[in-house]
Each structure stands twice: as structure tokens, then as C-alpha cells.
Image (tube, rainbow, N blue to C red; front, side):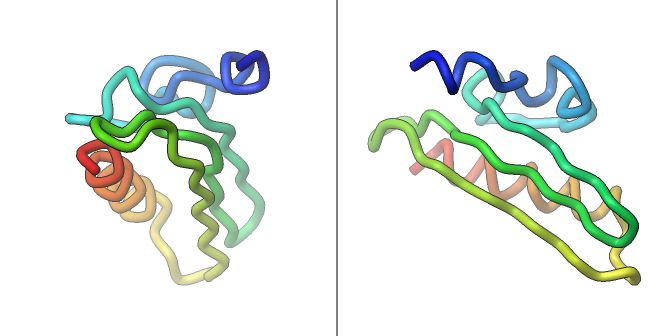
Amino acid sequence: GMFVRALARVGLEGTARHHALTSAAGRVRAKTGHLAAVNGLAGTVQSRHHGRIAFDFIVNDPRADANVVTEEEDRALDALSDF
């Protein structure tokens, strides 16, 4: 509802615009969060067969490459959207 519509469309808006989704394009809304050594993304993805799925990804590791984390989040969101 209203809460979900208030979240950025991943790959299109806000700080979430830097994501490169394929099958999940246009079907993910989320809020990003970044602190030193912490990368987060939380929201919902509209799946093909099972409705809206909530997710929360948090990586708390100073060795983590933020670009790799974003790529893996995108892969996971594309997989969830095909569910």
C-alpha cells in the first residue's frame, strides 16, 4: 500500500538507482542504508507467482566491496522476482 509506494523504485530512483536489475526491473521498491563498513537494502519485490516478498540485506564487513555487494543484491532480487 502506501508504505511500499513511498519506497524508491530500485534501479530508477534515489540511492537505489545504482542497481542494475534484469527480471526484477520495475518490481522492487526499497530503502538503502550505508555506514562505514555496512551496506543495507530493505524492501519488497513483486514476484511472478507468489505476490509481494519482503527482503532485508545487510552486509557488515569492512573487507566487503560495495560494488560486489550491490551486484549480489541484484542477483538475489532477480531470483526472488522469478519465484
